Structure formats: C-alpha cells, structure tokens
Amino acid sequence: MRKSFILGIIIALLPFSFITNKASAEWISTANVGLFSEYRFRGVKQTEDAPAIQGGFDLSHSSGIYLGNWNSNVEFGNTSLEMDFYAGYSFDIGDLNIDIGDLYYYYPDNSGQTPNINSNEVYAIASYGPLSGGYHYFTTEWFGVGDDSGSTYMQINIDLPITEKLTLSAHAGSSDIEGAVGSNYEDYSISAAYAMQNGFDLGLDYIQNNGSGCTSSACSSGTVISISKSF
Image 1: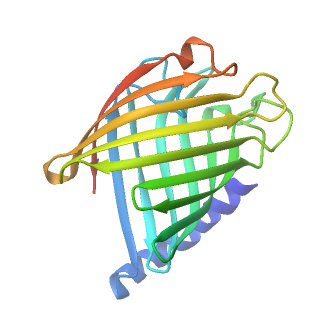
Image 2: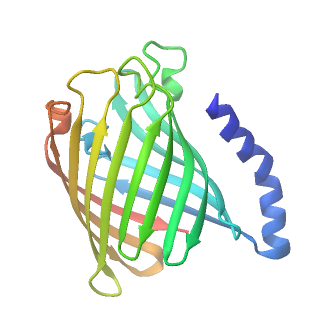
Image 3: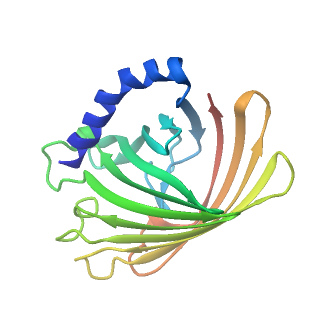
C-alpha cells in the first residue's frame, strides 16, 4: 500500500536527514501547530462545528524533495483522528514552480472497518506569481465513497499581499467523485491571513459550497477563525 511506501520513506530518511542537516544544511525541518474554530476539508465540515487542533512537520531538501506529516482531530462515525503522510518533489521552470507528490489520508480508528475511508491521491500543482492551480487524482476509492479509483479534485487559487503582514486569498475547487452519482460539487473560499510576531498567524476564512453532491448540513456555508504558529 502507498501508506507503507510513504511511511518507509519517512522512517528511512529521518535519521539521515538530521545528520545531513547538521553536516551540510541541505535538509530543512519545519513544524506547525494551530487552533481552528472548526476543520473544513475542501469545503466540507469534519468536526461537526467543534474546534480542531492541527499540526505537523515537514522535511525539505535543497534538491526539491520533501516529505511530511499533518494531523487533526475529526468527528464522523467512529473516527476521531486524521493523519496525513505525503512526499513529493518541487522544482522551477523559469518563474513557474511545479510540485508533484503523493498524499495518504490515514484514519487510525477506521482500520479494519467497512467502508475503509483511508484514501490516497497523487497531485500536481503549478504556481506562477500569486496564482496557483492543482490537479488531484485518487488512486483509491474517495474516502470509502463510490466503487473505484479515479475521483478527481481541481483547484485554482490567488494570493494577494496587501501589506507585509496582511494577505488576502481566494480559492475555487471542484470535486468529481467517481462511481457515486450526484456526488460532484464545488467549493469556494475567501481568506485573510495576518502575520503577527514570533511566528504566529491569525486566519479568517469564509467558505461556500455548491452542487448536488454537497447538500447536507456538513456543506453549509460558514466562517473559520484560526491562530497558528510555525517553527
């Protein structure tokens, strides 16, 4: 499984990365933690309006290779924790940045359960100045929904620095769920991020969804407030 592949990379490279970081500074490690008024994934509520504590770490190499882990509490079914593992490669072509990678969504509480909501996607994201766009392809079923791989997510984003500390952003995304009739939908958001001192950031996001595949209360519009810190 791809989870084993990514975990194998992390286990194999972690000791080497710290040694290399001290020796040549080619590896850089960062971490982040944040408190959010709720957790939204591509527009959809994941914590039933309850707050979420989220955080993770990243290792990146000067060659463009990176890997990391991100975690959050969730609330659906018998599932209370989401752990994401990812690895990829980022490189520049002139002023264009290309980021390709693999992301595995792992829910420990769901192991051995039916349906199996653990999922894997591969992605490609291109960035040019304030604009970015991404294509995500699921190599497994979409979180236990549908009957096959092949679900996709496409997104486009723009980040506009207003001052040195304030950035406004806009996002639009489209989910196409393979094998599940009427499960396609679009998500939109407008965000503001304010950089404070000592690595703290304040965030404000307004989120709206549209489409036949997202009509439940989990898809209602709403605002997410957050405070986070990077290390």
